[in-house]
Image (cartoon, rainbow, N blue to C red; front, side, top):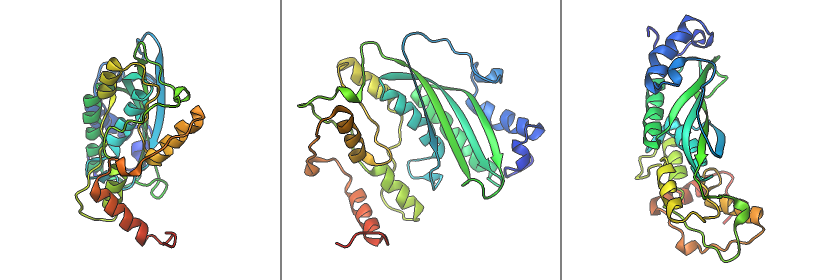
Amino acid sequence: MSNDKITLAHGAGGQMSRELIEKIIQPTFSNSMLNVLHDGAILSMSGKLAFTTDSYVIRPLFFRGGDIGKLSVCGTVNDLAMTGAVPKVLSVGVIIEEGFLIDDLKKIVTSMKTAAEEAGVNIVTGDTKVVAKGQCDGIFINTAGIGEIIKGTKIDPHSVKVGMKVIISGTIGDHSASILASRHGLDLDLSSDCAPLAEITAEVLKVAPNIPTLRDPTRGGVAAVLNEIAAASNVGIIIDEDRLPINETSVIFSALMCWNSPTRANL
């Protein structure tokens, strides 16, 4: 490609749009369903399906442990996994701001490809739009996904009962703390734990198919997720803060950010 930045012509549907697709996007995500380059992908599936979609507008676009591309794939893959499904295919919609660096776009789509391969999914259809400078914060990504529900499972937040336990699979708050550190240019020993969880979830459900509900905490964190589950099932959830798995660096950094925030409450 002759340009090093995205121009409005890349979103106009003409030769430069085609060039963007054929030289960057299609070769990166290449598979038999996508390469047809039709208005949609034709799928062959059976049984119960799960379907989800999410949009990603994170800043900064690149952070320790990932970037917006990896996050957009892992986020949707994990949402499918939390329904008890094996993710199969994704769609990708990209809105790019005029002036965005082509090299950064290449890094992002390559990151998406790597995450999709790790998760065992294909990106089979998509869309690209370009907006004028100032109308988008660099790049926005929407991904939607379809998965096949694992037989014998019924993941439903309304099925949580009194006496059940909450199991947390890893340290909490690492992703948010890593994003904040990157946003403020701080070189701290923090890394996002952004990763596809479908394979792990499928193995867990083989052993324990009666797990009532699964969640991948994102915005709002564990506290928000537990509140949503409690409200859905009309139960109370007791949290022992001393037993929460939290990375010490994340705790210290988050505390400092709260202390320095102009909106912090008086302590």
